Length: 492
Image (cartoon, rainbow, N blue to C red; front, top):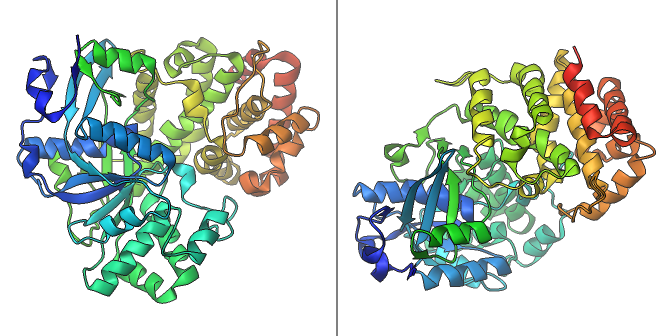
């Protein structure tokens, strides 16, 4: 028998379930968060919940929001259970804790034109607007890394600033109302896995505003703050297994979240309208966010891309199963230590080599059912943002790039759309059709893949990388993925 997760049923849950010890009726809003997915609810929402458990910062509760049809479905599910979420922490031995988080207290209706969202952000109690909209959601030109003003979404929002279709257009419209009413600015806080995520959020908001209202753009740039941050916690998608797992604890939760037994949040202390005391819940305020995020993006995020395309071609379905594969694991370690670590500087308490060992253990956690398909999604954003910067530095500094060239060849092979056992790989990228067309052409002419200048820039013109890529892709097609892995592992 299960109990429907709601505020009035919390006391009926089992003793092993940790529940809010604070009166949620005393919470008042301070943060509006756009993109209420699993990661947000396991990360930022949890840190606030921990503060509330200590009786702190109860004027910083979260109002959820979104701009996609999916977000309205999530709102309906969350509203039906009083915006509560069950978090299930999984260490390698199994479940280590079950906790109900209550830091979200409302969720804005999702409508075309985003009027309710704009109105809510324009109210004075909202002092931080935070986002998790995925790495590829910031309208960045992949070649220049500048703002992509040509994107149809940006063109629409520039032409229709009062009825935007994107989160950024809504933020700009809300800030205009706040300026005109004398309410003042809020902090824009990206919680996405992007190096310099605050700087990128500033770039998108200010650049988009400048297309329609240059004076407003200047006001935003001068008065709003956009702190950089590094966020880290492995949070799988919720599926049938997760829904069944939460029921084992007697809880009927439509949107439970599982996560690993590790969290990290490093934040620049730049908040124009105040902030919660996140450091009292375990977060770190630091002026060296770049060092932490560089370590994470180069080793963890790029580390995922080292292995998932190889695994997809070999039809290995989860990250922990990938790490249990002797050949892929050996490839992972060799690339990390020989080709990535030389570019990463230590941060307080953690050398790059120690961080590789930590990530190795986290990826291998068998209790976390994180799928190869989920982690491989959106390679067209993740490879340029997380893998290729290390290739460029390796070429510039005389560091090996053979393994990274193999990784790119594995991505090209994956995008061809079939596995080595003959099964079909379903579309798994916003630009899948273009990638697949290139990948199939590259089967006969590998250089075709590197001619995607929006991803690779001038890397096609760099012989040390381009020749290695061509050799690996030819070997993968002629001899198979495992033969390529063997050849790389044996390379001196």
